Image 1 (spheres, rainbow, N blue to C red):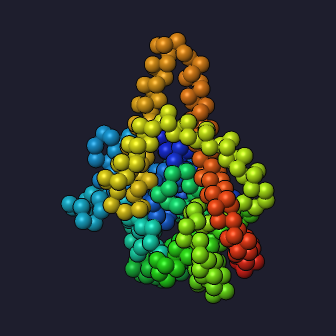
Image 2: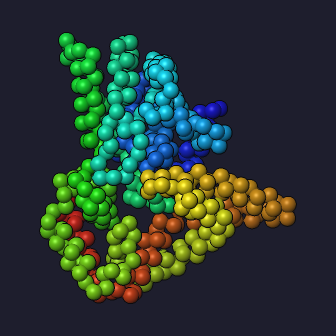
Image 3: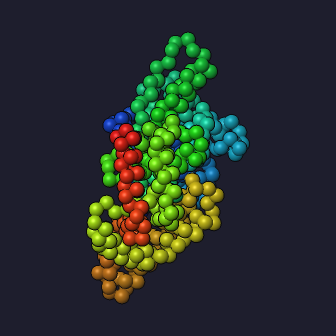
Length: 398
């Protein structure tokens, strides 16, 4: 029952906060048996909620600070390990290692974040050796372990109803050369793990290079089946200068600073402007009505992020931790009032409206940007479309 609770809780968190989770290379996921997943850590504890959708049987190695207090334990569970600055004695770390090894010996799945903490910066943080030690300990005990890297990529990690991609990497080889010392085995396995994690991540030279790559990667996905990760990966070495020149040319237009943007990219209608306007007229009222009837949880999540989030990588977490419980309480209160009043059909109407608003929000935001720009900044439409085509022609169809 405990694991069923966390599966349901994490599913609800992801289902409400994100528009869609796409798994790339799901065929690489082990079909059973002991498996150690090492995942890139980008968006705070929310990464765990998303990874849990991909590896539903997985147990996390989590910081003890996430398990302090009843409220935190409603969202988080796993094998507790103290951060280096919180460690009181070596026995606590040894006990966590034994639990991890036992989990794998029992044929279970374990998920570890080798970076230890999260960052939305241009590069992954330094990888610690804990996951490697767990793997080597399991192998020394004869456990037929599979070591699988996971990458995670958000369109906008903090944005409500954004999209997420999880990349499943190739299973690492665990055969090590004979004669290696214990330290040599650790270094070789850590080297392999680092290479594998970098293959499912995207690393850039600077924050500016990252921002440019994310804008071009999102542009490449518009109206195409391309993946955000594939486009980001192709831009690790930098955005080609001809594309940067086209972007500077577009942004040099007189009205470019006043255009609306979605995920940092100005959108314009492709086809009849009136069709986009009609679609927005259909979806807009649904989104607005859904926001109005759920204003308290939306406000609570927004206020929590403003007050408690100390960086963009925990904005989504605080919105979920506060907004979701308030949503459950608010929805329960409304339904009880409606049922007491005998308006049971309004209960169904509230549920359907909320679901419809969630499903419509992402498309409605894109339509709003495109319709406004198409109406007010029509002269820029041609340049924007040509820029989009230039991106598609330059970047590989990944």
